[in-house]
Length: 552
Ligand code: AMP
Ligand code: MG
Image (cartoon, rainbow, N blue to C red; front, side, top):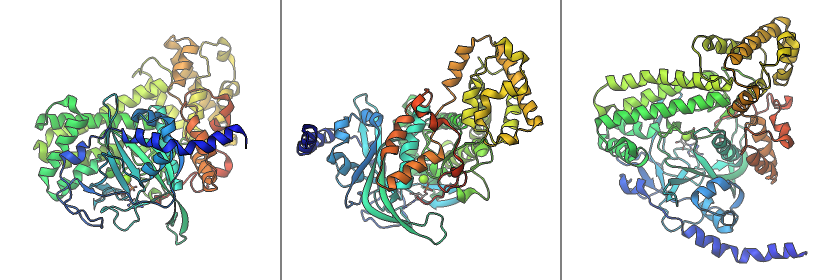
């Protein structure tokens, strides 16, 4: 044994106490459970819970918790050092084996529309909130374990989560954050040391999979469905209490709750939701299950399940096998579905306002708000100073008409577009092929580029360069601006799957490598170039890479 190993060997005996002290010092202020009505029944058995926003329930202890990964940025938000995160005490706490002073674990009651149908009570069936931390900047963060055992809301399921889906949630929430997309965060990913049975494709072939827990972190996990359940049950007093709590805690700038403030609150929820969807459309993210119980009242991306990233640009693509028939949650339908979901929220909070017209007006405005945001976003993706209605609608429509005709990688296409220099006089004279040369890496099947397709694309490029030229921005500036909104690295579906394959073999190295990669999605990372390439052919039809089930 060399000296370093000897030190490593000694360290654990000192670590737990110090780390435990740091964890014990976390300041909890459990406003949600303090302000809102609790389920009086303390038994952890599945049932309908009425007249309450939550049920007190502790995580189920597990056999052998083990840390797989943690996010240093989220740890920092909570005031936890790397040393603490790597301690045994941390793993015990964030797998649910040990409660810290001040924690008051609970599961939330909520309902929701699933695939367009009212589903009644859903609730935190496998999520257990530990409590709300107030950090040194006075920010409030709710800590929530996903996969920590059954709750009164578990219905017929087990309350657990498997490694596969937990890796996907952990990596994607952090990837989205670094892309600048509003999202819940993930502090840690741990293994429980227990096995969980899952029938991944619901085809009668259940398998045992490693159980895992993700600690999610967000200012609030309240969903559209949190309000819907009380409206549906006619529990108007609880509805009002939850709305008032939400406004006072998360929207304090709106003022004290009143009918006018409820309306302004709904306006802000619409605006935040529109902004979130614009971001999804910018980076090519498809949520996959935009049920109203998966819509955050804060406009954050929440509940990473069978989500996916557009590789070849196809607005009709949905990653979710359960959604394959109706394609309700396909990429191009997300803005409309968000509005549908907002309409359900409007129905739920209508009793607080008492008038339909103002709510309808706000909902109608969502369309303009989204459209305006989307136009600004597209013009930034194309590197323009601002959206010019005289030319840009037509220009963007033609681009979006061309892209799906030949399999074109969305991320690579926009990133490469920044390389074209409209000020380069030699470009004016080159033929179609030379003009398109910088983009060729974006094409999955170059043979699909027939003569017609080439000339249509090249024509578009000439129009585009002419339009960009009118802005008079030096090329390096335009390129820099474009590269700041068109990521080079996204969490391609196959990349998460490779990390899962390795993790299931007890090798967590790719999870760490990808977490590191997605921290700087807009930077050139020359040593990571392979992750910026097109999806490899083997991944085209592989489960987990192109199609995901809800089983998680
Ligand atoms: P989701 O499709 O993940 O949004 O889940 C819909 C509802 O099912 C939520 O109420 C979840 O808490 C619940 N749920 C999903 N998976 C499980 C599970 N393994 N155990 C208990 N409840 C679950
Ligand atoms: Mg959910």
